[in-house]
View 1 (tube, rainbow, N blue to C red):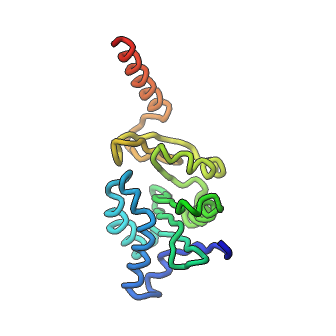
View 2: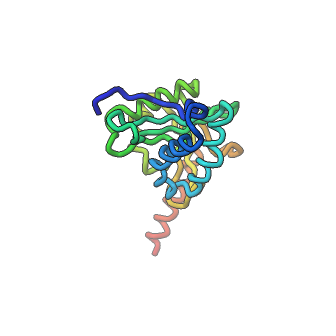
View 3: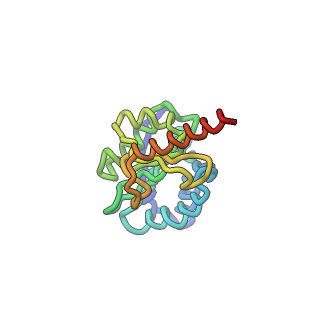
Length: 194
């Protein structure tokens, strides 16, 4: 990549291009993350029926994106954001594989933080993605506040930073981890007995 990265907001295109061009751009932004439907089965529906319409109308949601400076038709990173009275959340954050390690994640997180108005936004992701997010977690001192099993699928646990998904659940992270440890130990004891 030879030129400077530019973070764009999909909101800026609502009235500046035709409806067809807008929907094509919104679709291109979505397509770089379509694969995450395997972790979040309702992701496509959520993007097109909740995130996108609320980005177009109102000021509580936004979609940021980065184009490849050498080929502006290629979207290489995106972030879906939500800001309301209850939470300031990075709902989706993605940098295309071949562009990782170039600082793009930091740039889009910085702009997300600016838009959300907090350095501690609520963000969740599947447990197996922890390594991908590790440097950003440390850089901004984000705090693991909840681990939720079976919320979006039965394959992974959702790691929650700077907030909780289960608003009515008063169980602390320490209590959740203790229960999980007890289950693991119980299973191991049962295996030894056999």
